Length: 160
Image 1 (cartoon, rainbow, N blue to C red):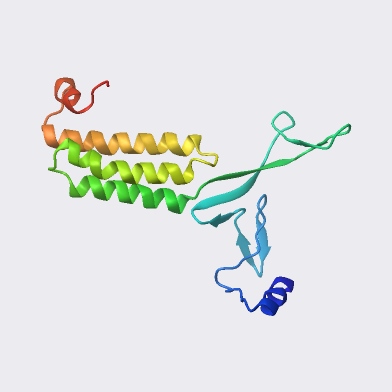
Image 2: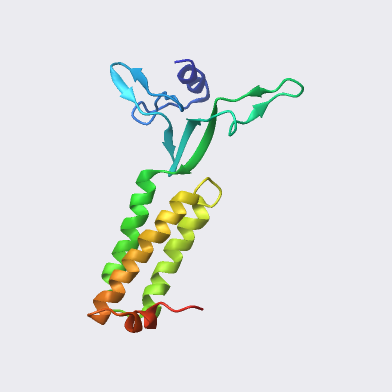
């Protein structure tokens, strides 16, 4: 590879298990193996998606060329699953702890994850994370109140 030769001059090497050639829009066939479109890097998924003429971007001045795809960066599935596990573990280990202790443990995890991924396209991801956290906390509340009714649940979930 040309990149490998160029990096050797500087004294650097590429690890073949961590390096791959990929297409961001379509699947490609490399040595008989189908490669998924896009790439995961540092917890982000980088991929291009096809778009119609009304959602496409344009390049150029007087005679603009309509782009056929848009590159979208969002949190990777692996990062989302790791966050789910971290939140679930905190709630599981603090099953009998007071509400303030659970909030104190969850806040840094949620804030850190949100701050890391706030710069990319993530509306759907944040909505699903909110829904997942709601289900976990509701289950935590029900486990504490035995038979849950709206009066008992309102003690834990109130409007501020």
